[in-house]
Image (cartoon, rainbow, N blue to C red):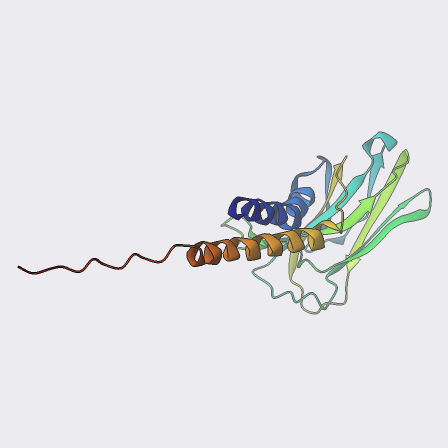
Length: 198
C-alpha cells in the first residue's frame, strides 16, 4: 500500500509538474534567435523562412529588463503576431509571468524574463513575418527582446496538469494513511512481568 501510494505521488508530480516544464523548456531544436527590440532603436519586425518539415514550431520571447520588474500578469507587456502569405497564423499577448526570471550578466545588472507566444502548427513552406510590439503595461524598462523559435517541439497536453494533481493527491493521502494504519495495526505491548522480590 505504501509503495503503491509513493508511486502514484511520484507519477502525479512528474505528469503535473515535470512534464509541462520539460515540454516548455527543452522540447524541440532551436532554429532561430532574432533581436526584435533594442533600447534606443525600438521594435523591428523579422522575417524567418520556415519549412513544413519543421512543424510544429514553438515561439518564445526573451525580454531583458533594466533591473528587476514587478510583473503581476494583469497587464500585457508585449504583443506578437506572425503572418505568412499575408495570413495571420499566430497572435498572442505576453505577460512574462510563466517562467522564473533569471539574472543577466553581472556587468549589465539586468534581468531576463521569458514567455511563450504559442505554437505554429501546421507550418507551411514560406517566409514568416514576426512583429513584436508594446502592450498596455506601464513603466516597462526594457533593454532588449529576442524572438526564439524551436522546431519539432512537443505540444503540451492541458489535461496533464489536473490528472497529475489528482494522482499526486491520491498518492499523498494513501502514503499518509499507510503510516497511520501501520501504527494502529501493531500488537499491543506485552505487559511487563512482575518482579518478585526475595
